[in-house]
Length: 119
Image (cartoon, rainbow, N blue to C red):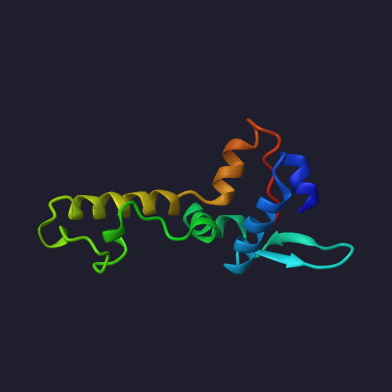
């Protein structure tokens, strides 16, 4: 975590929380000790951006009614944008599911040498 923080100029505390979230959701494995650190728990082609975002931020949802009909909205019974928002929500989720960590590194590593993911 220290090396990542320094290499990418990220606040160590923030990075620690992100890494804990990724580990909790089984995307990375934390190893304690002198030669400890973090490694991917799955192959990069098995980790999509929906999993990453959900691990760090929680499930992606544009509006509360997309998560539950018990959202507290008093307009829900006659809302005319709920169905279109559900469609957009599904498309957004599918978009992020369609980008894997491998896709990202394959496409952008040549552009930015800082992007290096090892399994």
